[in-house]
Length: 310
Image (cartoon, rainbow, N blue to C red; front, top):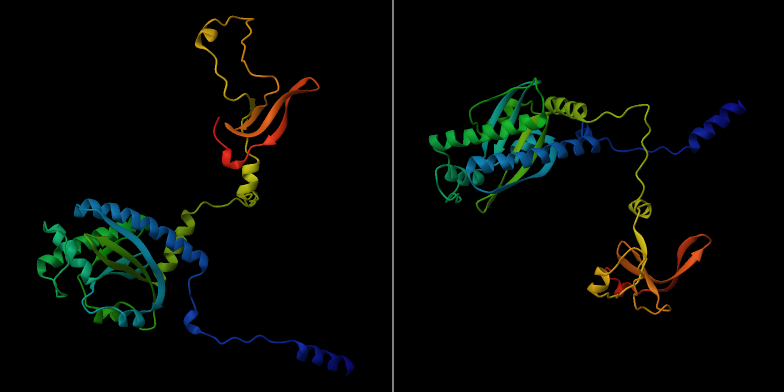
């Protein structure tokens, strides 16, 4: 009986930590996976900038803006009505990736490909059939660069026709969480954005592929953190010399030198030399002997303000 009461007191004395459960956070990207996605899509942005530069014939900049996860219904609610949206059917795994491009970015790109200066459209409007075809080719180029960046040999993507934002729910269940990788493009003075939207099923496969591409650490090898940069600098080798500064010798004296000759430096014996490290003077120094070795005895330190290369 006494033992039971003692155990009950111990249980009561333990403080329990209780947190509110947020079911929306389930499946959220870990920091490691977020860093992997960021790294691979920053590389994608650089390669896409080069490809679009050659395709459009003008300089532009593409940079990764954000990597977010949200429910498809929240994503649909935040999508502008005239956004240029093209779904792509994927085979590995069977799912759909969606490319979305701001309508304000579409018009400068189409204008450049039609021989213009890439100016923005006068106002937001629907695209003509010719503009639709031109922009469809641009989206295909974006997707081909994404395939190259993801390095998934068994995957293939097939482009569908442009859709409206109101029918996005047909490609994902209403409670499906999607990953949105958003990029900013600056072209001909206009800044806009596009994003790649894919479901969790494809995200899991992509992260696995990224981990396979990363170099594997051997279990028998131990990895130690690199020493701080100060310690690494202190271990560096530097050339040290004891020198006489400001000496001038006539060229005729140098030309007349022979083995066994004595060259007069015309420097008083009491005039100190200079200890240099890497060609910079740090201390006055006098020549001395330490046993059977030549040495330099340090004197006054040179002020850092007066450091100069010898």
